[in-house]
Image (cartoon, rainbow, N blue to C red; front, side, top):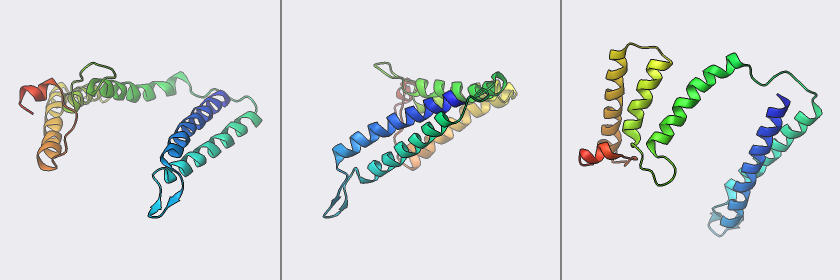
Length: 159
């Protein structure tokens, strides 16, 4: 637990440093029309760094403790984390690769998650994996006119 606290505090402080740097680039002062673009991110980053330093110091003062997570407790976390990571990569992978788009990746995510974690019947898995992304497509693309990441399947349908 102590090592996990130290690592998380260091990573959050580093993230706060990146935000602080970029906020300073945008301007952290108060202009004629109000706060500059970097004002709020700057103070959020300062708060994040301060809290991270507090957690870091607290972890240093505290002695060695029990394990951060057991294998039994890590398994359900990974059951949620891995499908979400796969969904993100399928939607829009990093680099020059073309993703499947939000709706097709959502169909795969729903189907995989329902079957693997929920142990639902295949009929329910297939039905909801198709119906939910189609409904979501019409809500965002047709009614709200919000373009979402699309892939080759939407291209085939002319969107």
